[in-house]
Length: 126
Image (tube, rainbow, N blue to C red; front, side, top):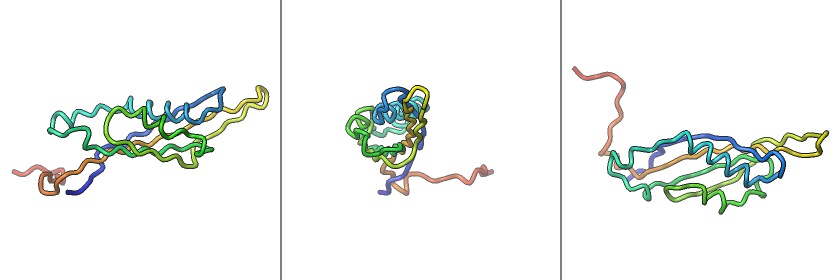
């Protein structure tokens, strides 16, 4: 059985005044999740616990992201979270504060039997 990526969603989040990378990361995950409605589990008879969810968080200081807290944001599947260099810090010199912007990519994978599904080339058979 081959594991196939079935979903890719992206989101962004921020923490404007606390310089909290985890808060920005969690908000980015929530933003990405709000773009998804995964009806295929019930429609096709898959158990959502079979799904592996791979999350990549981009922030300027990846070591400051609490991976366990980000994992807790994911309602389905088996979560794997990685923080990498990315995102954006915007410094406001007048207010002496840094605004943290995080990005999130959420990929979902399911084990799918190759023989069970066939991709169409977009043309209909007559």
